[in-house]
Length: 134
Image (spheres, rainbow, N blue to C red):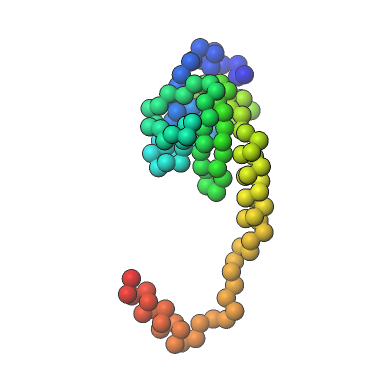
């Protein structure tokens, strides 16, 4: 548990503030955008940024390519150091396995899909016509 006095007194805290304090998002505004955008779910439901979380709740969130499922262990209304922030939650085993599997799949794919050759003049005109139609 973090050593801050505020973490032991709290029984509930806003989800956007907790996500910021646990260092999932860099600012509360970005956390709010993620919540409003449907990238955060609490116990399977889509919350509002003002939804209060309690210890023991399951939160599923998406960060870039990764989707994490974490269980709230402690609360804090202050942004903590990285080690203390990791003590606020526990990631589930299946979430860790899924993230590693997807990471391996992304690494296995080529970074650049090389075309066999440069388009010729006729193909460039077709590409231009297609782009102008849209």
